Amino acid sequence: MKPLFHPRVEDLDLSTILHACADPTRLRLLADINAEPGKTCGTFKTELSKSTLSAHFKVLRESGLIRQDLGPGNSRLNWPRTAEVHSRFPDVISAILKSTTRGSGWS
Amino acid sequence: MKPLFHPRVEDLDLSTILHACADPTRLRLLADINAEPGKTCGTFKTELSKSTLSAHFKVLRESGLIRQDLGPGNSRLNWPRTAEVHSRFPDVISAILKSTTRGSGWS
DNA sequence: TCGTGTATTCGTCAACTAACGAACACCTGG
DNA sequence: CCAGGTGTTCGTTAGTTGACGAATACACGA
Image (cartoon, rainbow over all chains, first blue to last red; front, top):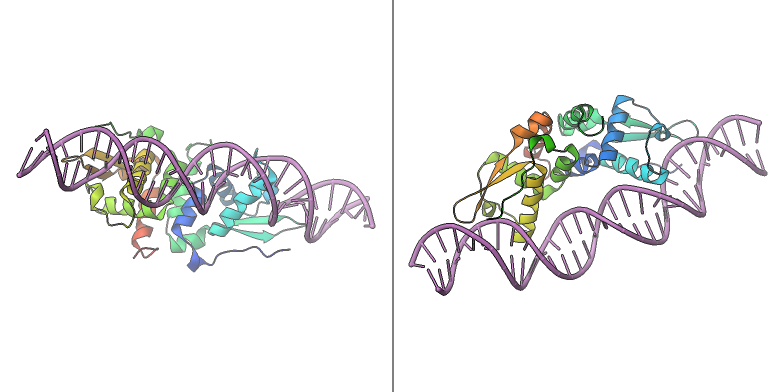
């Protein structure tokens, strides 16, 4: 398997992270991953094609918001990096996630 | 003067707000406005052209992050709408602003 | 009224984005 | 070995973005 790139904590960039969160689809994925850490990519309910979804996961991963590990078969396990992001940008992600769970768009 | 559009609090959208914050230039403008409310557009130090700057102010205004009132002459006074945004999306903007003031890109 | 200062709007351009299907890569089970 | 399941990568397309200069609009002062 090709090694997946994950940025180091010290390389996290606030604008990159906010850009990753600014897309409704990605915000929903991020919330789901935080609500249920370790989910595989295929378990997300969405209307989007597989390739589109994969691209969104890549943006989340390369921004440092999630970690994708190898799972059984050829699957990926998705984990939040919320704690790491918090160490650089305190409360930003937790505040965003709280707002997503309170009727702000996608009940 | 043409009336400037300002979204109502109940129409604020988290993705729109995050997108507005995701640009380094706009994040800097937002931080400056919060640090010094009432600044006019011309008082911001930047390398960008006037039209580009105006476009950025428009994005901030239409996302609901700032309010632009008429000032003396033909100037605009820029005010943060942080409290209003906070009422919809608690702590999101304040957390972002705190991160900008701590060496995250533009000392 | 005529210039000056302030800011928006318009038209253009290059770069980026999100979306898709098709093709590919990889593991696992039969 | 082959088929099925899981994701990624590639190439394309339509739409959006950020940047600029030039033109415009407006208020104020001389």
